[in-house]
Amino acid sequence: MVAQPGARHSRQPTFAITVRDVDIREVMTASVVTTTPDRSVREVAELMRERNVGSVVLVDDDNQPVGFITDRDLAVGVLAEGHDGAGAAGGYASNPVITATPDLDLREAAALMVRHGIRRLPVLDAGRLSGIVTLDDLAARTGDPELGHDLMADITRAALPEFYFHDRGG
Image 1 (tube, rainbow, N blue to C red):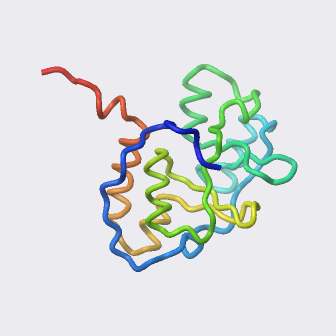
Image 2: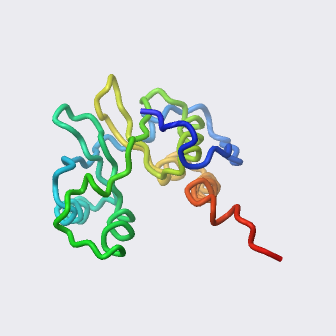
């Protein structure tokens, strides 16, 4: 699903990917940790710990992504706000879920991530969740360590534009 117009920040990425043309199917992780949005925040945190992941895709009964929750969402949106772990994870998840298809070019995937200020991109093949590509995947599996640094800087600026682009005075 493509985000709503004007979502996050629309600045174009400044990085230059120098690797050969690569589809994200070549760098994505095929195993995606999923659960339902009604699972408690505590259960999702335990799932993240057990599976050693920093995010979980929330899916509906048809296995369609309906939300995306990260370890940062749990720390900042739940704990820092004083909520306990009993609430449903769906209430703290990001949505709509920005997704890609396996044949999306790595450059386009990176630009999509920057445009929406996201570090993880679920991959749908024929409408079914088939993998996930992360910022680390893009950097590590393409053999371009500077790519990860450049992407991280661009994604951080896109996710926090008011921090980077406000008038800081003289």
